[in-house]
Image (cartoon, rainbow, N blue to C red):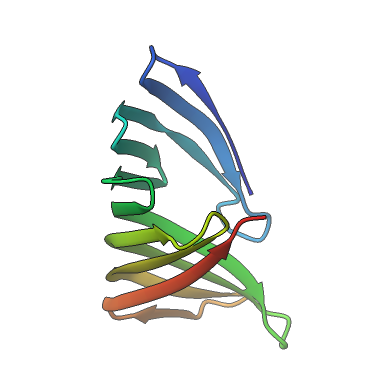
Length: 141
């Protein structure tokens, strides 16, 4: 869960402040802090920890982005162990609106520093850095 708010710095920029919370994580709280802005109608800049993204919109239906994301989540498995996944993604994305309510997004890049921590216990699994492709369809009601 993320709670975030913006403090305006003029017409085009703002400071983003907030917190990210995951009750199952060994680090349940992380700060959300950074700068967001739109220097022009075609560019969006979001330099906010734990994610950063720079987007270019050449027209009303297409968006190209460069991004860096720190991701994590917690899962319970049948043995009642808690598994924490943490990883860093860096890549490029393309999103296109197919209709007013339907869009497609393709992301490609590199997964870095992917770890699985099992609790209780001291087992940690580390996956090698690897490329990824993620294709998604969004429907807005």
